[in-house]
Image 1 (tube, rainbow, N blue to C red):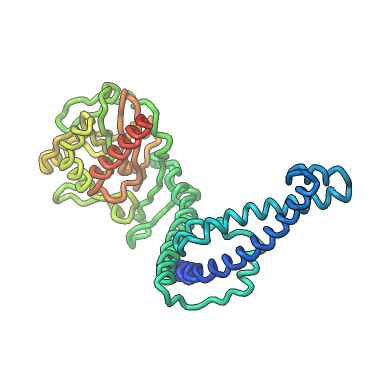
Image 2 (cartoon, rainbow, N blue to C red):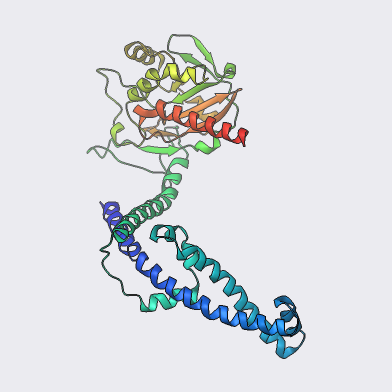
Length: 375
């Protein structure tokens, strides 16, 4: 609600402000032309004096600099010449440009004297032209974008802190005052606790830990043997028909039924392999029996691996949460190549689109690589 109101205010403010740009730029341009004309006369007069003494402009300035009185004149004239050259270039660029082209050259409107003069005589008006309406639309979009950037900047430390809080699994280690604690339900004597931890940036470019996990089919999966390029993704829990989720599950960030994410990788499995990734491995703390049931029910073509003790969290600082003293992996996607984690994705905002977005990221990375090679 608050963000929606602020977004509207910022958007309307941007629209109102930028809609005045065509009129302001016209007044600025008139003052710019006048200033260039005055400076041009002064510079021409100085050049004529230099020519009468058989000197060029630079020689005249050097000659004046030899005396104390002349040095002051040389300094003043040098600043006039520099300003004349700058303003002349600005006038040349802006004179034949339309309103939108002028906006693209906004730095040319920053001479303090001219801008102050234009603003002093400027009278805002409701934009009745097509250009004014266009600038109003651009201003609204810029205001909207500015608020989004400011909002993200403000909430980033809070999100970062919440994810970096250490997750304690020991029963005697209740959440401290530094941990995020959220109560659920109405029974004060049975409040589930949740803490968050992990840092996705600490995962990239580290070796895959040498852990042996139980696969859904009862076989042993040795992560240290993953030398071919593949995808490892973690998930908290795959729902099972007739089995309720843990208390408070629906209130926890990153806690959801991971079925949509599994189906996303199932449907895109052939495309993932075509992209050069040999396999997909999904890891959670769920036991192998539940994983076997989900693997069969969802017809998954890839491996589900069980890490009931969350040993992977002892090796990697993966994003995770602890609910009622039980650890769960947060949804995270990792690309493994040559035994190392080459890239990682988190948060996964829409698990149903996890695999397509991974493929998009891979395509973009390869396009950039090809572009860099051809440059």
